[in-house]
Amino acid sequence: MEVAIGNAKYDWDLCEKNAVYSGIYSPTHPTIKMFWEVFHELSLEDKKHFLVFLAGNDRIPVTGMEPWKIYPHYLPSEDLIPGADTCFHLLFLPVYSTKQKLKEKLLQAISHNRGFGRFVPRV
Image (cartoon, rainbow, N blue to C red; front, side, top):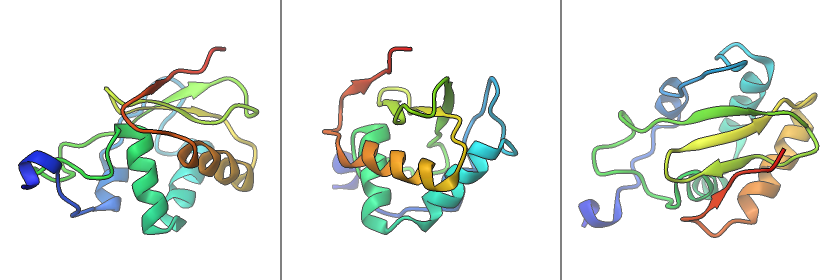
């Protein structure tokens, strides 16, 4: 059954550790640090909504989160909500000035998605 629908053995710390950064983003970038603080504070339900937002499914592959990666990419305006490309686990993330603004925009993004879609913001 897990092969068909995935599993629910989440390892959120490994998810953070496996993120792949490029461009202006690195593990020490202030927005990335705020993102992971906000992410780890989310409820399990909201983290599952994030998975649907990013990958189109609230389950992870049967192989677990070890090979599962997130690829944050820069967006130029903090007025935008985060976006995602579910095929490649691309997270389009603006540089936010505050943790509160990041949390507000992230919750807005993950609360209004349908999964298996593609949202690439126009800039």
